[in-house]
Image (cartoon, rainbow, N blue to C red):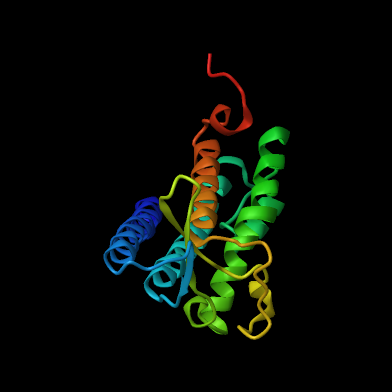
Length: 196
């Protein structure tokens, strides 16, 4: 269920991009508008991004039970994903390193966005969608998310990295699925090993 929620929100965000790029291209052409770039406020893709990062965090948090059962110590499952990683006594070293790298990068990043959204400010109130015509004359869109959600204020957000909600969400979701594959014994899918 948790993994299906991640797929659902990724697809919903993808559908918004597709639908709105097509609609923008059609209206741009019909109205005879000029220019190759347009910025517009848009809340809907941020609703999906917010749901996606929340689902990703929930995915990692749910995964802690399987990781603990497979490689953990005695007793009940620790209360956080980080604590579970700290107690994986039976985990093979290459897998443990991969789990820690994922926690440091993907899980922490998703948590920063979720924490900002749930406790301080939503992304849609301080950002926008930027439509841009590509060299092939097709339209693309970037739904910008801040570089620094930990600033906890839309007035302090920075956008110099041009981070895109769909690209980031897709990468975080892919990483979660990779970590699930590792926990199910399919480490070769994410560690470059062969399954003989």
